[in-house]
Image (cartoon, rainbow, N blue to C red; front, side):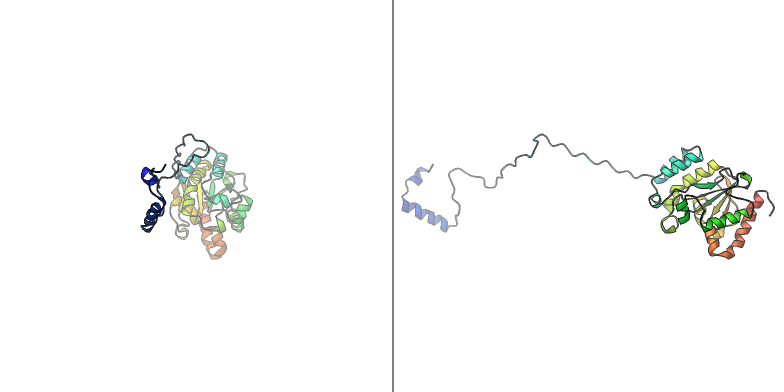
Length: 265
C-alpha cells in the first residue's frame, strides 16, 4: 500500500521526483518493507533428511616387517616339507610375482654335504629345481669327481642342494640385500632341519647372506664356521664356465672337502 505522502502527489510532481532520483543514480525501486538483498535462499536437503553420519577415519597404515614375518614363518616349521610350504606361501618378496616356479631344493635331505647356491636361473625357474642348467651340470660333474651325487640314496655319498633365493630374479640380476634378508630366516631353518655335517657356499650371495662377507675370490677355499656347521666357500660353477682357469682352485677346494669327509685327497 502506498504511503499517505506518496498518495497526495500529483502525477507531474511524482514524475519529477522520479527523474530526480534517476539523475542521482537510483536504478532500483524500494518499497516500504526493508529487504535484505544479501540473504540467500535455503537449499532444500537432498534425499533423506536425517542426520549426516560423521566420516569414518581411515585406519592407520602399518608397515609390515618382512624379515620378522619370514622369521616367524620359518621358526614355526618342524619338517622340511612344512618349511617348503611356509616359504612358498610367503608373499612379501616381489620376486615371487615374476617367477614361474618356486625352487626349494634337490637331492638327498639326509646328505652329509649341503650346497647353498645363489638363486634360480632361467632353467631352474622353468623346471622348479636348483642347479639344472649348464652351471648345474658342471656342479654335478665336480662333486661326482669326489664321489658325491644328488641322486645317491646313501647319505655318505649324497648331496643336498638349495639356494638363498627360491625365486628367479628378473634377468638373472644379482639378488638385492633386502631380498637376501627376507630369505635368510628360511635358509637358516633349512640348515637346521637338514642338519648336514658340512655346508658349501657356492658364490657371493650365500657368503654375503650367511657369513655377512662378500668377496668370494678372497673367501674361497678357507674353512670357517657358520650356523653351527663347518662351512666351505667355493666359486660358483657359472663363474668357472666363464673362467676355465679357475677350475684348478675349485678342484683344490673339492679335495679339501673330501679330506674333511674322511676320504683321501
